[in-house]
Image 1 (cartoon, rainbow, N blue to C red):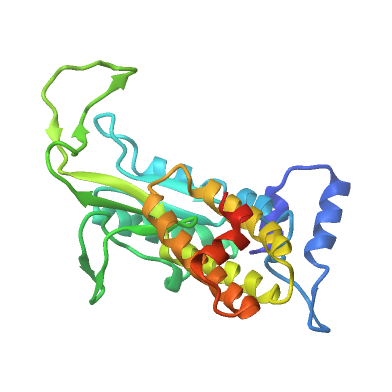
Image 2: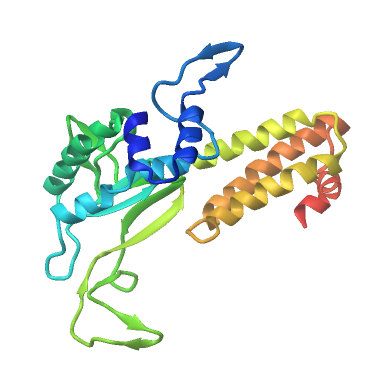
Length: 271
């Protein structure tokens, strides 16, 4: 990220801007090696997400200006969280044009779209793009967003608007033939499993109460984050994986413990 662009974008008192400039130029110490920071913001810094939001403010307006609504329907929609964003459109041509426009818009900011982190895909079906098959759906902020073909009784309807239990417009609706599901992404599930595995490994010789106290907030926090989407199947699989890990921990401590003994040992965690 270009420091001059960022500092010129921020409107604040001069003394605060001076402190911010010093913080950006302070450098980083990595394993005893000092590096200057001429560009970018410190990864993991408490203010870095805020600075990213300031620097990238305007991407959504760019897309809205290029593709205003037609017949009260959006041609392209941008969703952004700090430096992660997606652009959604029913037109592949519009998506490609948006990618080009955003790439140009990012140049003065000192940023670019990372090819390895960028995908163009369809949410319902596989597509051939740039010589390879792109699977349907995409990951965003730890979620996988995808559409699945369904029968007419589960299908969404185009143009349906409801208020409470009353249908506002009674004109015939077109069956979409698909349903959108948002689930925890495979990458997020794998990362969570690795965290749990690491905690259990670190507590090989600790009493079960210490392990339970360490695991509970991690599991509860992850579950709360994904509780509002389609997660029951994922939760079930993770429950089984974690149980197997804990049973292996029990065996390492107590020998080949029976399932009943293992459950008794972790009854606080299971409750």
